[in-house]
Length: 397
Image (cartoon, rainbow, N blue to C red; front, side, top):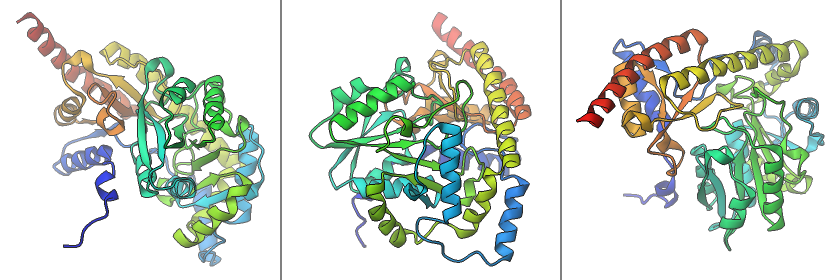
């Protein structure tokens, strides 16, 4: 039998997908399952974007584009970052990719040599580790705490930077916690990495989904970091597979050369359609949807507190709540298994996001309608009531 490459053994599994498959299997049996598991918006692309897609298809604009993407889209993204997130950059520093995944792959291939170590927070989005592995690198997960909003700090860089460390991969807002890095903390972390000659890859795919203070891009703190973003989350175009990478000008020729071979270009029709995302009336739709996500978060947080689901760091972005379930006497995997099978509510155990908090945390996604969230809370109330009774009986036995 042909021997597989060693990297296949180091590829991190994605348990959220397994939860999705289990939920779908139950739904196929006729069960009504409410998914608080997968991180996919329940909104889809606005009608105007679909109209632009159809016009582009009718006009025959489905051929290859330049590897870096169509100029008009790169310019639109540059303007978006300037007007919304305070970052002014040359559109020539933006490369359109096949989703944020394509951007991460190019960033990793451009910066990481075999054996290089990259620091990431624990918890963090598991698939990001696999891009480091694909480039021959080694991910080192650094345990974080609620006191630092489950984000890396400059102190973590000082404590864990080693002879093989090459850089960091961080996200703000984060998946699975929904927490953003305070600006001063991000500034000192970037400075600590840069002082060691390291790189910073910043995942900003949830930057547009904020619920408290309006954010600024990390590019406003250091113009030489690499930033990835996507049309999947704020723009609700998950299956369109469209994202972008922003990189220092000196790196762009090498990155574009790799992009030309690895992907040729991002999907052409999706690129043309995405131009309509930035039209004022379409941006108003996205803003209303952002406020809808905020309404869901603001409903769930006090309900979680009432149910005894402790949220150690309140989310201020994305659409996730990272909850501690230790009060119910089950580890997170068993908790999620029983929640799905007994209450018909899908959620993701902490094991998906690192080992530091794996046994006692669960990620809940509120990328579903408020009516279904009300139903989910009712089911969880009954389920958790039964668990509390079991814990009380065990305690007094």
